[in-house]
Image (cartoon, rainbow, N blue to C red):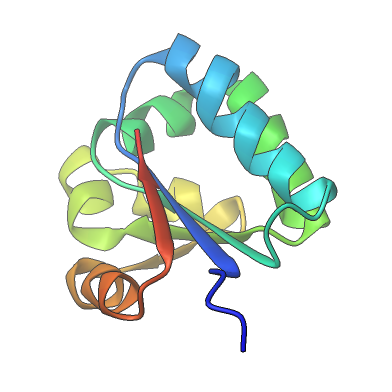
Length: 115
């Protein structure tokens, strides 16, 4: 029986565009395309929600991730604070309260990468 984790949760909280382009988006997309993880979930949380709502290049990357099969989620409480919930939903991101889901991901012993 393998104990290898099969699901990766990328918790993206940074409002830094360089972090988004040069790490978060690059790794999240490639890990799904290359099959390094069976399931890849990207959670948009905090300042990243505001950045994503205003940056067309990042929005294009989100579309690529969606097409590749990355699960896209966003924290509703944070998105509401920035007034961007409808923007994120328009990108095909599931906007919901994330406290319980993130806690469940951690309890399920999934790999979590927080940036």
